[in-house]
Image (cartoon, rainbow, N blue to C red; front, side):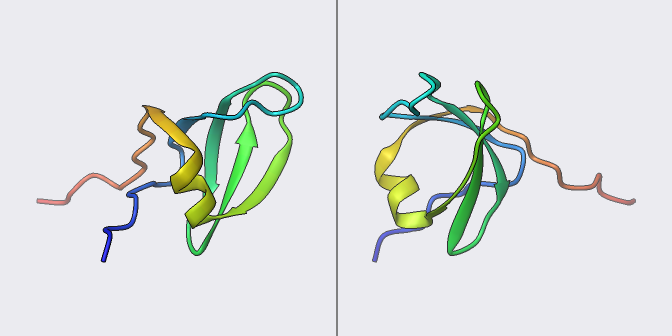
Length: 72
């Protein structure tokens, strides 16, 4: 079985197919079975199944790892 793609909230990704506005870069707003993305060009929000994101992903542009710092 294939390992699921590790995306986290705040990541910026580039998809292969452009959005109708011409943008290809998206920000991840929600992660789960479905992933909520916001177009960084026009601000449009979409909710897309994880499997489709994994197929259409070109690369992760910027990791927005929002984990809290470890307490010592």
